[in-house]
Length: 289
Image (cartoon, rainbow, N blue to C red; front, side, top):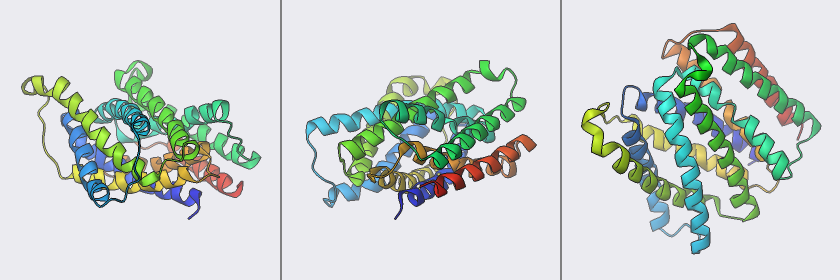
């Protein structure tokens, strides 16, 4: 399957993952939610490891996957907290700015060179993403001084670094995509358990109460499918992480519509125009290959 189609499939499932994630953290303690979502993710993939479908790795390779878990874990901690306190249509659009950072890193340090028409498409998508984020300012006072906006931006930057890191381990170091996904899930669960045990459990009675929700399982399932498509796309030798990142962040469509329809968030003509810009940009990216 084409890496572009895989990137689009990843975006589709990622959009519903964002919706399940919002349901999971809304009026809930964030850190135990993170741990349980990670644990369900790992449990669902554990049979793959036990049945011997993963490639063997040495200690050096395991260290790289631990590093990925640390980067993504930091991103999740920042973004999950922001999502719990912000409208979904705003948090998702800020998160959608990840391509801006990834493209800069991929072109500057990884030697990627998209085709001219793809550059036009990427530029149109980035401008549209920025328009979406600026439109969201009307829904929050003191937008750029909000700690949750800052948290979302920092988490997004870490997510962009993770995308470039994925290109390194999957394309240049030739890690097996399924093996990466399985061991990453285990290290992520361990990392989230440590965070939860050290920073949340000792003070759990004096903080926001935790509620178990079955959406945790849905979060894990949707993320497994989205990540599987993503890792396969990135592992393709012809794949450009700058293009994949733009496609992956098109998940903002689902998050945006869910925010308006399900969570009754504010509508905006600017947001709809920006979404049309994203559609046009994705078409140009597809045609430019």
